[in-house]
Length: 236
Image (cartoon, rainbow, N blue to C red; front, top):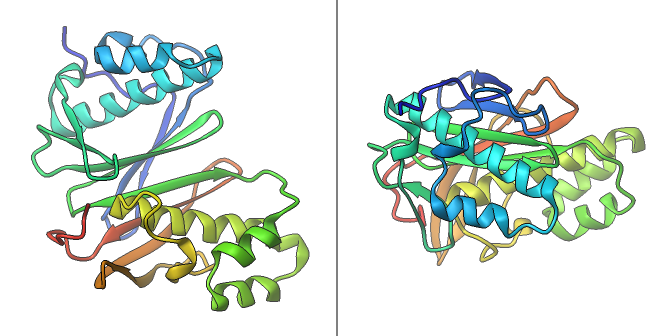
């Protein structure tokens, strides 16, 4: 069977610099005809079955079906034939991807998938939901400059500003595949929506990255990051 159908319930776009193609997937849109579970591996199906609640299992299956269909469509191959491996910290990679890089992020019933041929990338999405501890988390996870800029915004703006900076930091860490080995307050990602270069020190080696926001048609904040040196050995 050829699994080349369009990713289910998705909206797509690209960044202004062309470094990233992205797909926003509604995981709760129901089971459209294109959501074919036969594209999933036995390991993916088994992992879905381990979720305690069906909503989480359904969202997992929907996101991984969409990921396979995006990658299969981009590469022009059957989505079911894609094979994955993981980096040192568990970041998924394609075994037969021909240099294609990807990353996926979830927030409740939404998934954001990013694809690039220009080197390792990271994406992050967070639905804009009320938080009582945004100030505390910002003080703990932002740099001194970021936290000072955060405090200069008006209280009604702070929730959005918090999530903007948070998604930018998460995207950087996911581009590196660094897991929890790098603390978010150790590097600048910025609280603005514009593109910014940053440097993250990994084992005393500087890793140069670019990070920017992604505009989405839902009430959510999202960002992507890419390594400026596509061949960097720091892409873990």
